[in-house]
Image (cartoon, rainbow, N blue to C red; front, side, top):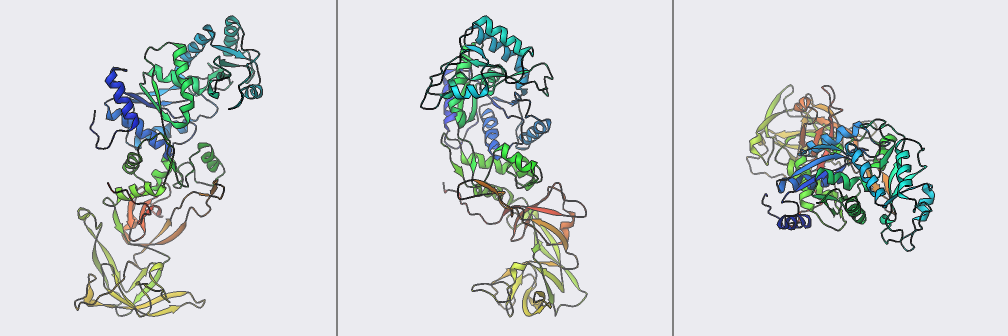
Length: 550
């Protein structure tokens, strides 16, 4: 087992205790079992990292299993994407499994329960079953079909399998306890009729097992030792254990362990609600870079290393909580700051004319690619009489403590010269047409030979070689209203444009940069072409979240 530098979490403590007792012969076998009814989201990333991470830590194995017991909602597109997402996060599975591969064994298990008098066919309507289930304070009511004989139940169940009945006409229920304080134990449905073609088994089956019945059997068949799932399944654990105990096929059944799911501020992770955004065209598919899906945050430019580090930092607990999304962005910045090269990009550009710079002259100035990582070297950027500066770097009437460019003020153009604004030229409508400035040739490289100091440093883009780019300063996809409900953020795309230094013309889809003083950006994998460069903001440079000191 690999050494860990952090304290063990409660799941590791359970595994250590099992290993000391020899419960599973010292083996650790986990699984990640998504339902292929949508794309994985950031909450799933925690489960992926945990299940595969435990297997790595203990020298064990982890399966990727598709829980395809509901053929009405599953799609091959989701299957392909889930496999790609797990690989992208840096993990590989021991076996690729399908719940549907075990339908025959599940059917045998259901027959075994019927044979033992622990399951019965119920003709009640779904509405009646729901009504008879009772409440948290009132016991349920037994079905009038609960005491059918074993032979009758077996006959009816075989007829269900053979297609003698329509959808919803009959179900198979476990016979447990209609007065149990745990509603999940009040004779839960374990098989329902659904005349739907299955992607894997075709038309072999018209009855399908329910999740709570299928899942423990899947784990047991695969030899899973520790079935790690999220906290909402804690109340289902008695049923998980009941199924395995009463069926009785497996002498060393797996152990279900629940942990708190990942909740992020202002982040909606319901697959049903995310699908609605896709279906209504409010987003550009499941991989829209504003989406909290793994595909979306990958397109946005997040790195797998950052996501794994984030999941490691938040740890594993038994209590639900909400994590500040700024914490995730912190780990993205931390991963990128020494990896990506810087480029000059200006938004809301303002033209600058250096009136005392020789007309027709252009010079190349060396600048560092990454001030945190000298190994990334230097590049040269052009400087000439006509430049673009960022709209935020000029104020005609400056506010207090504004140290960037304004009439009469001198600033440093990064890596170039000291530049002073002398005159503002306006258009007829009063907007700024251009700034007329002068430069000091003796300050080349950004330093004065006479010791003169300037407080402001701004960046620039040379006008004749500037590359016009599309910039998407992405914000949170959802806002939260006063009732705590999610509402779509109409301003989440933040689509604008700007000018970039000439090397940006060579940017390839998926290539990341730091736009100087703006943030980290990625060339969009779908929209960036040779003729148009589209960049998504990965994260701003400044973080509102600070890591705890250790």
